[in-house]
Image (tube, rainbow, N blue to C red):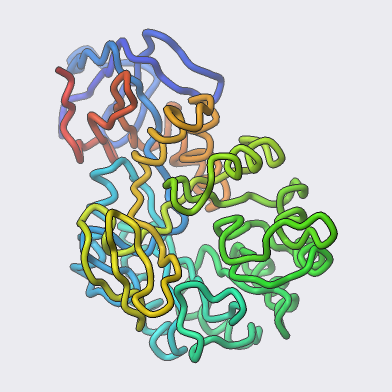
Length: 381
């Protein structure tokens, strides 16, 4: 058993606010309220301590795909994101044939049962061909509740979220099915009207998949899904803060109208995250990554991102000028609550898992702890 640790002197971001010169005490795998006598003191003055990041929409990293990789490759991708502060991660799939998705659900559910990932997010195939983005059009299908149920069953209780175009035939019934089974129904890759989106929210949808992207633009006569998703307190909006997917004004609009308690920063990362430029496969589609931006080789649509959440944090505070407490909520507490794991992760409180990130005064990552063990040893010079 590793010695207990007291991380002392940092600016600690707690649910109640920022504590200057605060401390976090780790005993074993948990945060505790008081330090044992033999605790190791780690001086983190001049740094920030924040909860480990929670990414609820992520397709891979480190050159590995959650959609098609082996167990070893999936674990490589998970580890890549842990090196960037994401201590809790939901593995997202992309559109494929049902047989392949059922098989993928079985593999990923085993990793969820082992605690390597926090669950599975099915993005497609139940999405609109009008807003398909980086999804194979010939594999798209309407959200038949029986097929949605097949994916849920294949995930063996580890399905966390399904993204649907809820305006398609079967969409509303599928939302109700998901809600009944405790799975998040997310509205995304949709061509829905404002009124259709409202209907889906009333049926139980609770998340907007990467708001603004893969949906009709906000209009003054036809407001579309964006207005409905921003205005409804039942909806949490995903945002990809990489500087490519969203203009800073769109990010500001989302925070202003939804409020910090209804925003979840995600990566929507694909294989190239933490790896580099080059050619990759996203499901059956070929992707070219150049200067960190992923686009389909055929058609040029944005194909996920190469974002990591430490970069999203740094951008949010240095470029978008958001309050640190709001950023921490969007990166940790809000997604943890949505995923039903806030009792264990998402804040630096006694009794929770010792998942934390150390940032320097410029918000660069300097250390990562998961379950009381260092993933990235502190670099505190």
